[in-house]
Length: 214
Image (tube, rainbow, N blue to C red):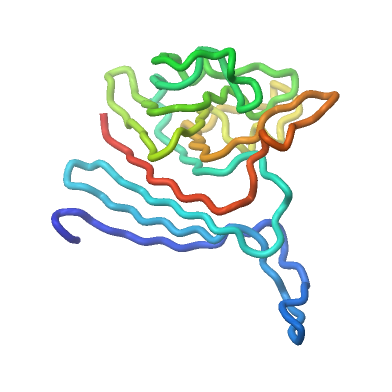
């Protein structure tokens, strides 16, 4: 503890698949671990707010691009109200956002669900300055970041959305999934795919996230 604040550091490694065998230099050939080294610095303030500095550094061989880069949280299922200052009111992605004005919007978690024929990631909002999730009595959290960010929320887990092939296979979880994206790939189209300019690249990222209690 320092000046009334609590500091906590966490370091981990998010690995993409199994290690691969690779030449490390002119003499050494061995296992190579591929993924992101992550460093977190949590500063918990006396008022209960949290400042999180999140650094990601790529290690080893990386894919050419990623679906998204950021932070995923699972929050209490009572937080069903959503306010945000970004592009809206409908869902929008980096390659499909210029027709959506930046403004202050309100929705619900269920209201941001998009019933695609094949369940998948949905409901992204881009270029956000801030967002809030709260319950019927106005209690919840507010999030800001040192750069513009994208986010989506869902009553379904990412795993459920990824594995489900039909709508009936979706089961609401005991919580709300919040994805805070530092970069998100676009959706492209069947004929062309995603243009390079709209791909989330596997480079280094550093974000400072402020989380406050409403």
